[in-house]
Length: 289
Length: 313
Image 1 (spheres, rainbow over the protein chains, first blue to last red):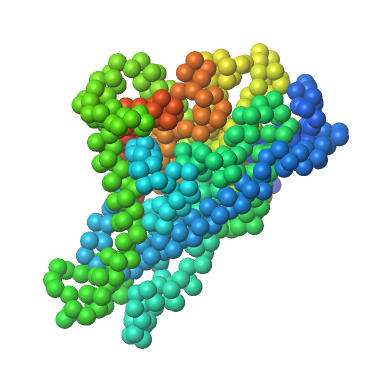
Image 2 (cartoon, each protein chain N blue to C red; image 1 turned 90 degrees about the horizontal axis):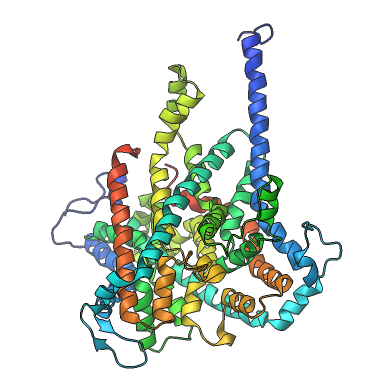
């Protein structure tokens, strides 16, 4: 290794690297702040008095945080009701996603059967099909069976598997050694028992990832409740927030407070389960070998 | 009966040859179908069924309140006369073909930045991913405020550079750019996927290029970019498919305005079906959008096929 001093080329290189690094940090920090700004604005505005919301120049930290805005929101909106409804739907739908996707993922990933590859092809196809084409006819079909203004349209389809989750689980399961299944078969287990007792315990990471992604998707679902729910007491948080905003157009501080409340559970889950988010992406096999 | 475990690495991935099965193979054959049933039932009930029914709906004139009447291809004819169709196709195409590449580039640049040897990568990744978990309604509420002409954050920032305040959501030419700007906030998932791909690149290839004398820029263009091309294609394809179906933001923020500047196709379908109660016509527009998306996806996959590198695993 040659000494660094004396060779101005090498010295220039290190200095240049440091400048590049510093520039990189500066750029990243600017971008990071930009991405966080909307959140800061959300919380800031939620703590202002109605008159102060429109202040220019912008007040980033309200001098007199109106914490009671949040209390007011809970008084004006049946938020507790909405939260319960949303929890009910989310939990049932997520369990449905998990149970069905595990079954199908196991079938596609570890069982050998004629037609398996065709069904897998069908799975990939449904991932790319634009869902818009089913929006109207599904509504009509649900209407004809009397499921409008019930939770059935929001929960039942989840019990039939979800293409992306099935794919993720299949990829994960394929990596497990086949000897496990074989040993269990020799011991007399049937396929369901193998899935439940042998494979499932090993799938905890992907189960966690699917649970988080599915849970968030159901919690955030706006179009579903919008289409299928009409009674106010059945509304989910997203729908309730939308209606609140429509009714109280000028009460921005309260709307922001309500929005913050609607985001809070997600943020908590995200920070607690952060590991599984990143894991989830790698399970889909998109990015790694 | 042939041994089914000839080659351990094979058994899970290959299907057995065609013949009558006995014993274990028969069991797996039956169980395979049984366990895949939820998905198959789902496809029938929630994809194939509705799609077929929708084809029937196309020929009907129905407003959900009185019985439907057969009207042949009238709905399709109406499609050709409807000027709002042209408007919504333009809006959707604008949003898609400008927004998707922008999002892709930004996600890729951020991923490259985070792939460098920097401290706090986890924090940055979190910060960039967080907006994408925000529900659409809350996001819309926040951005309506951010884009406010008088006191919105966006106009404050561009004011620093001396630009006059823009009436983002009430001035038609600026509405779609506002939506595109807003969509940049949600590039988190794409960035994470890119970052994971970059971190999984085999270092040997890059080192080899370095040994061969390639400088950083050349290594990037000729080694890194091609190696992540399959991920790029995935992000691009999924981006296009989802972008064509944008709905929530336009529904909550502008309801299609100002002057139909943000009337995207799915919103138009929604209005046709659930505001004007023209179920047959809505079905036609849905099929048109479906065909457009499939055509664009197909073209894109065909065209980029030569440029994408898939590592054989």
